[in-house]
Image 1: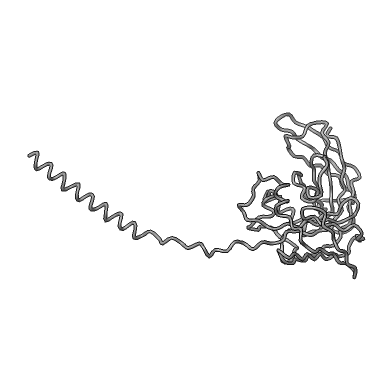
Image 2: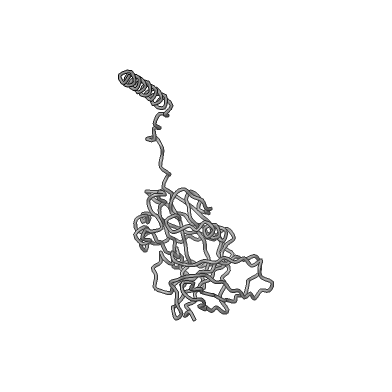
Amino acid sequence: MEGKCLNAMLEAGKLIASMMMVMVAGLWSCMPEPLDVDDVNAPQTSIVVSSLILPDSSVCVLLTKSIGALDANSETDPHALIASIAINDALVNITSDGHSYPMTLLQDGVYQVVDMPLIPGQEYHLRVRSEAYGEVTASAVVQTPVFFEHVKTRFTGTPPDHIVRVAYTITDPPGANYYVLNVQEARRRNVVEDILKVDAYAVIVEDTRFKEPRFTDEFQFVDDDFLPGDSLEVSIANVSPDYFHYVKLRLESDLDLAELFSEPVYYPSNVRGGRGYFNLHWTDVRILALE
């Protein structure tokens, strides 16, 4: 009896093993062939444009190249990133009203022109030609400057909720206007940091909210790094509608610095053949002690 049971168990084991081999063979036959990814092209490198009017009314343009989505992240050092992607071989020129203004390379992709008159309402045309990365063009209209009549910062809350309140008053010029306000720690920065405002808290305001030309408003935000007595830099700029919506999309998407230069692209640009934004607006900056 024991011999018969042993033989039956052996036969059952052979049957199970045979069935498993059939199942494995069937599964293997259903596996798709590996895809050949050798022919997938990387995104073409683009020129990325950023710009700023400095307090001395000179204009600076920052030129960088775009990067892959995995080449940098929010932990990447901004200075190292800009130094590695700066375009320093370009011929950069701005024209307006029949006059041409060549720009000079300062540092790490920053080009400057110091003798160009800036006339509100007048259009200016940027042309960039790089041996390595090609050519891009862009146009921008100089915006009417706006200045703070009154601005004050105030600290409320207790740790960990460090609430910074900013109250300000401006006079709104005629026509539709769009404002970008920034708050950041007051410290000495280089031109690249001034252009990109890496660590700034930003607020956008449309004058459709205003009932009178003289407008007073207040906003607040939480920043654990700020304490009473700290010096803050508060700024306001009257920007073009297109740039306003560009900043709005950046804020809604919560894009960090690395994402501004990396593929894929989710935000608009006025740079033909490239990316980024060429704009011409003055910025009123005030240094205030946080009370």
